[in-house]
Image 1 (cartoon, helix red, strand yellow):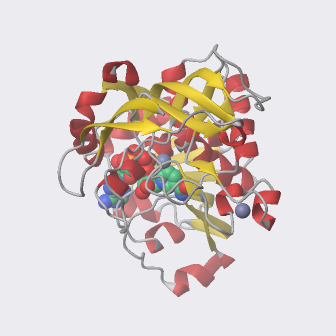
Image 2: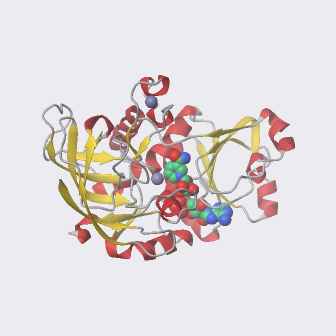
Amino acid sequence: MIATKSYAAYNATTPLKPYNFERRNVGEYDVHIEILYCGVCHSDLHQARNEWGESMYPMVPGHEIVGKVVSVGNKVTMFKANDIAGVGVMIDSCRTCKNCKKSLEQYCVEGITGTYNGYERDGKTIAQGGYSTNIVVDEKYVLKISPTLNLKAVAPLLCAGITTYSPLKYAGVKAGMKVGVVGLGGLGHMGVKFAVSFGAEVTVLSTSANKEADAIQLGATKFVLTTDKAAMKKYDSYFDIILDAVSANHDFTKYLNLLDLDGKLLVVGLPSEEPKIKPFSLIKNRRSVIGSMIGGIKETQEMLDYCTEKNIVSDVELINMQNINEAYERMLKGDVKYRFVIDIASLH
Ligand code: NAP
Ligand code: ZN
Ligand code: ZN
């Protein structure tokens, strides 16, 4: 077994604290990764605090993992020691269902094996995430990362990156389209970067007036303060696509009203409450609401390769593991530009 240091949530209400546990030995198809950086996703906070229900403790969050391969099992073909590798939101799936066979493992009929807050494939070991010194994952669920990139800024691509890339691609975002991004957080700022890189005209729809300059710097051409009713009115039936990356409970109808004919509201944010949707706002312009969950392994690799080619990374603030609880509070206040990433060296 592999001794591992980490930070864990012990319950829904107390701060994360140090936690020592053991990873499984490296199996024949496994890749053993020494973690260098791990991004802090709002889903980590949702689950650490049991906002979605049924959280399992102790829980080591973290699913935006970048590290260096220490060793590989004797049947591994895609990785070798010293490669740079990534792990995202899933570490396995059934591999045989119709969706897994279509490289859409995130929609596995049996459900994904999550990186944390669930059991590994053996059904008894609690999977633990990336706020830790190392991880052991089957090579099929490990991503290749170019060592030339700024690795701390690559980590958030493993969740925030793929979660925004996948629905924007699915919706066919391209030059000439008008795309709105709601919620300029970790996901939102990647959504802006991708939509801009696909050639769309991008507008940030935000509750934070102080994010306007950043929105423009990220490549958006317009910024709308969503609490300003008059400003929102001007964008009635304007957008082809709106990506909703909001972490808190909010009203969907407000954003549906901004969609043009056949416009799509792409929902990736996961607040705990059911949203309100007014059917009149849905039937007007034949609008639709589409959910999207991360992306399959093949598409995640495609996204990472695209980012390497286009030099796209996340805007990050590096923190020590010991500052995670403060980082959670700052994330709730929207006080991060635009993703916290843990320097795992601080755990050793
Ligand atoms: P984040 O960095 O905290 O960003 C969330 C943003 O939501 C904030 O920056 C803020 O943007 C906006 N917001 C916050 N409170 C709001 C409110 N009351 N009303 C309207 N807007 C509000 O979070 P994240 O890591 O990007 O994650 C966003 C959501 O996506 C989370 O719920 C997370 O669990 C979910 N998620 C889903 C998937 C998936 O597969 N679908 C994957 C990863 C994460 P402004 O200041 O610009 O308003
Ligand atoms: Zn995430
Ligand atoms: Zn499956």
